[in-house]
Length: 198
Image (cartoon, rainbow, N blue to C red; front, top):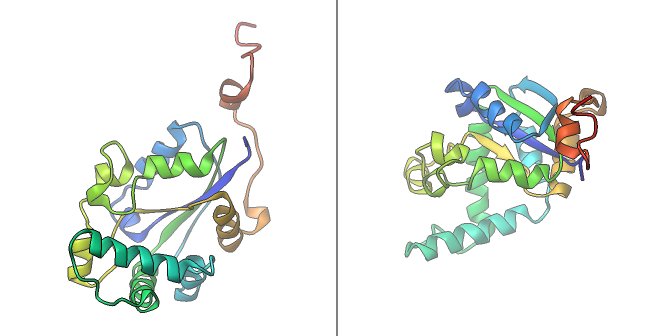
């Protein structure tokens, strides 16, 4: 569990708002270890591979979006999940390839869940105060839909360990991930905290 890894991408809006240091600091302060980082301008093809790494993503995302509309008493733009996801994916490709992003690998116990907790819910408007999206973003699904664009929510964070492993393989070569030890790992993981008073 201590070696669990997750992928985090600071999206173009996070880079353009000069929030890179603040966002990294939030993950670092939790005790997670940064093991890989790079800045890239992703190609549209890379973004499509990223979002469709799970073959069920199109269907699941479309169904969730339809349900979200109906839960708010709104009429979805289509009842076809794949038609809705085609629009979402088009918006994501435009958004994520619009400028540089920072791709990172974070490691530590429960890395996937910790990063998602710190990041907050996908929609900034409904994200909890104290999370990255809840504190630093004012966007909403309604505004994004009105503007016909993707929600600007600063961060992509892997949703599961399996997804994280696949996404890391897509964004990083094995030699780009550094295996090293932080001194603080003894405090975080040593059972008895031996050696503190030496």
